[in-house]
Image 1 (cartoon, rainbow, N blue to C red):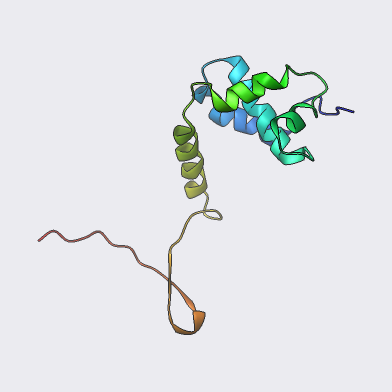
Image 2 (cartoon, rainbow, N blue to C red):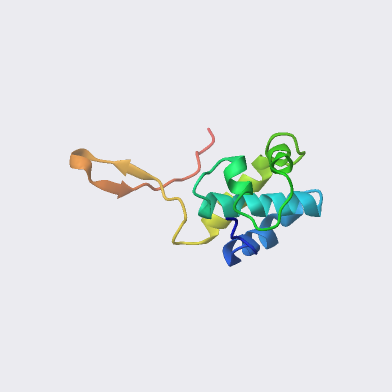
Amino acid sequence: MPGIVEFPQVVQGAMAAYGDIFANECQRRHFAEYLTGLMVAERKTVLGINSEFAQTTDQSCLNRFLTDAEWDAGVLNERRLGELQRDPSTRYRPYIWASDFEPTRATISPRKSR
């Protein structure tokens, strides 16, 4: 029996951060449904995600959002990666592997022009 009646707070936060990437409220809602479904649905398919919600549209709407809707996943991903880089606990820090599998922090410096 469907049980999701509202989006989790983490999804509501994502909607605030990424909602402007989508053209309209329907796309924003489908984005939130998809994120919620990936977190809580037992079956991570469009039908499985859609069937978890107490009130939703037909599963074909979510499918069209994922396959046909005009939104740029690259823009969303760039913004997501930018947020991860701003947080010291999730920032990417390259490592150079030395002998015996001991990681050493890499220092990246700009190339000098000749």
